[in-house]
Length: 292
Length: 186
Image (tube, rainbow over all chains, first blue to last red):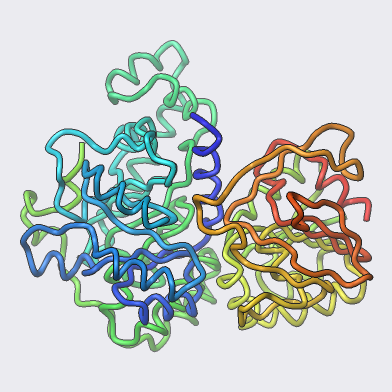
């Protein structure tokens, strides 16, 4: 990989300890920035609405993305469908700061993700486990996030994916190096990347939590489980008092291991988003099952 | 000696790793009370808006400003530079305002404008050093009280004023320790 890839990993390092918020209008973007978001994700509908509306979910209108870029000074990310490299080319032409190749949108390719190494713009991708994470990194992703189950307000899948990733990393770390080649075959990942996990005990890129985070406590739990920061999608602008909740989640990520502060910021936030239990969603309708 | 690192948001771990290599004790600074235990301070890169907001709310902004004005050596990188500046071009951001400089945020554009380069900074190292600029600011104006340490393509990107050292790039993202070693001497 080249120095552009290093610069892209470096930008993700600047997001650490921060909250990246889904926004659908310039006004929401400003609220997110004022609340202390370290970046915003510009999209037409938050995952909860995509889930409700059904149909095909695609990349957002460039006009709307440009309006959000103009409204805030923090980095602006946007989503493309899995495998849709032309939507990604369009976002690159818009000078977007990060592209999320996301399972929240309807996949555009039945077996391949985008060859992200062909782009100058950085990519973040979702993963449920170490294998998916390392495959996305080999394709050129410079940041990873857990998939969780978007648009539910139910944190269980984000927790499951983060715990899965951590336990697989610990297992790889504990292997004798003679077994690494076999482990790489089993996980269907590059030997070189797996070796780096074995040696360093972590992914070679920044790893955020996403998918179902709705409260300051959810965000702090993901931080305590070892992620570098969090994405909050529907959790903020589908709740009663978005401004307050956004600021509270930002504080919860900074002070994730200080329960007194978490208690203080959790107080009086108004109504949280209406949740859906992941187990009430048919497996074939779960977004986290998208991707390869 | 203990170096406090402002640990609100951004690349604070990287600074701690660099200082660990030099055998220096570090402490996370999140609230005003944490300042009691530190002798020097680093303000890392990250999003200056996110860091500024929480510093204002907790009172850390005022408390840290006081410590720096009393002479505590402080280093700022990228967002840290922005937060140390007296004024920020066309931006309502609240800063510490301790250095007599005016900065421009995201001055090289968005992520596609991020770059790295090698340069000679004789004050810092005898060897060439790597400078990494990520959505970086640069310094538009300095008062005579400020010493210019480095200029990249006619833009000021590193400055020193009394015991305050600020750079637009990210020494903590490299393996180099020379910038931190220099900081420990001011």
